[in-house]
Length: 414
Image (cartoon, helix red, strand yellow):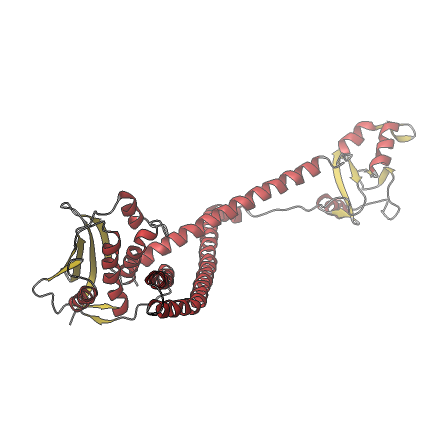
């Protein structure tokens, strides 16, 4: 498998995973902002107008008979369901309103210290010092959550130094996990697609073979008219084309998703080129096809590590494409040159056709799937086979006319 090809696929998969991760983070961020907004809105609309010690002191008046609270404040205490008491310098309760009966009438310094930070017998309280007296204002139990937090300065300085690394490590783990799960999901989806295509192709092959068999029988039936036999021949020919397209579909999907593992063996490209050329020349008329195979001196014995069947498929597809789409009315001339250079086996395939259009060249150079159309579907397979063997390939048009395909694959030493 091509390291460079797999590297590019891995990069694309990684970027896809990162994009999914970023979208998830943005979505979660938006949802959290909405949640925060709703929470803030709910808090603002809650009745949190508590009575505080300073307000009580302002409404409290010292008279000859003791402290007297204004009627408005008394009514507010009733509405808010709160209570209050005033302690003198000895901790004695010298005034109170709505004070729960379970509370004491005198408090020590330790009692006052505890209620300053926490609760008084489970009642949330707030204290306000008033000269030598202390105003204690409380709420009912479970009305307010109250807790004091404190941290050492040294620990806060440590947090300020490491928070960036903490964030970076967490973000890295998130990216790695997102990539891992995205890749697993993608592989499962690719496997499902391959199995679906393979299953459909298998189901089509059986009835197609029946059609081909009946069409061949009708084509050679002497009792039928020439027109009927010609129609049967056309059916058989189109069935063969469909069979080839199904095989191409399977191979394309397997190569696209790295499901086709090349069976590596030593292959002599010169031998394959000559065998394929002889195969096509024997099946064609002399005035239809001409193939010139030029093997450079020293390249005759060059071997490559490749799947022989796939390597033969390369030249079959190239020649078939020239015969079908070259646009040449006269004889189709094909030249296949092979030489070795810097440890690489280089093969140049060229024909005398009309060349590739700009749209076709863009399709062959594009990374997108199925951008070239059915006209050069076989060339896409050629490209995928070369890439699957770790090679390089380039398509173009010759200056003197026609098109070419330049392939490069690492030669096998020894």
